[in-house]
Length: 100
Image 1: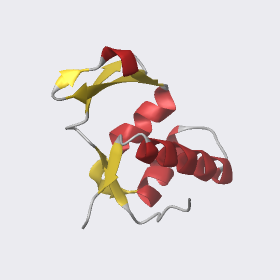
Image 2: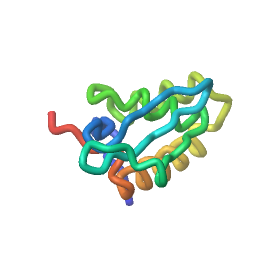
Image 3: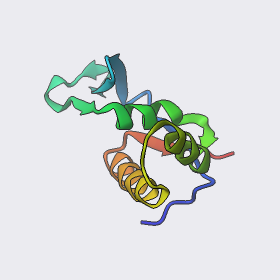
Image 4: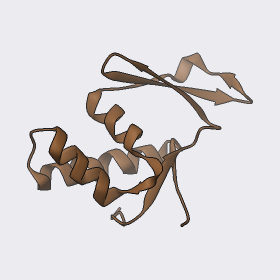
């Protein structure tokens, strides 16, 4: 899957409740507005930072730039990892793209 780096995404707040715990983020899926504690997802600091940046206004290019500034990583590695994260988040119905 090749992502459009000018696209804007946001978390599907109707599907998940998020809580920041230290450097990690916990995502609790909602089923008919009730927390499904059997499918909790825990993100590390990098994943938490990505989700925080997916605010419905920031493009993926801007997300990549901010991650590059925050973490000691080569841009090619960062872009590959970001694409992998985004693909999985889309497949798990965690995020959605925002039509501008």
